[in-house]
Length: 220
Image 1 (cartoon, one colour):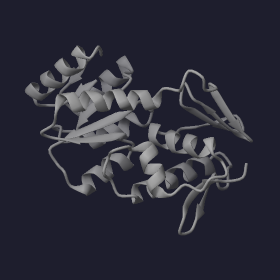
Image 2 (cartoon, rainbow, N blue to C red):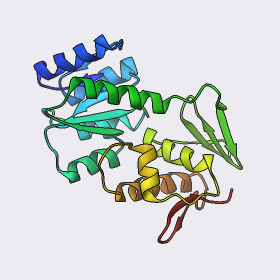
Image 3 (spheres, rainbow, N blue to C red):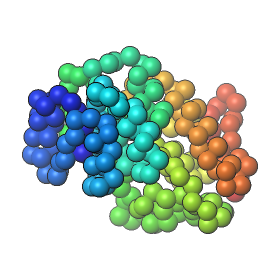
């Protein structure tokens, strides 16, 4: 789904994605985009931050209440604070205008590829009371569902794949936001959200901080 109030940009993006084999739906403002998102359940959304009325950040927050579908922000703003804000609230990537339609299409393909489990991978990963469904991106703790964003799920999956490893912020950034220049403190924010969500279902400390080194999965 493409959400942009500039008809020309929306048309260019739609043409590029359609040529690459994707089915595309468009919206021009946050509220209509939210209704369309609930109806169509798209695999990915490209969202302009500077929408009229309810902006792209509002839309991302609203979508994250019921969906973990990847969101790629598109904006004329190139300040780090905007990139960090977008990624912190649940965005998966950030492209600034003007942009190359070819690069945008490549990023879409990369995000969708990262989100799909490898054919040989187990569909459900279990470690103690923690269960991760790699197909539906659903996380469970002792059978209770934990509502994670796509980015939070990727972070947790990365640590679960090597449960004894201490990951530096840079290593986690490379896994979750490859090729995207954002502050390493973005990882801190996502880890905080993961901890709070698991605490709500009785997990005391799902991720441990190794001071001066990074983060690792707690012993489960």
